[in-house]
Length: 81
Image (tube, rainbow, N blue to C red; front, side, top):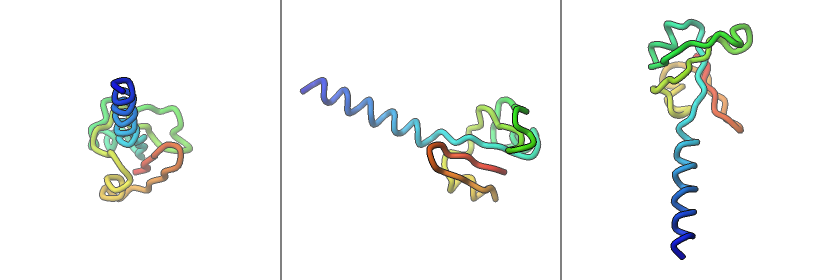
């Protein structure tokens, strides 16, 4: 019985962390820094914009829309600012 509770707790923690992960992209590195990004990645500039690595502000599509961004949510959640 104790093992079931441990497994349930692990699943709930994993789900909470997964919900909090939003990949954010912006038109400039300065825009990324404004949402708390530690670094800016330039891997897919033409397609998505600058990736905002380590951003801490946007945790959901609602947060993205508050910052006037466009959000897509399927297997992963992405915010385009």
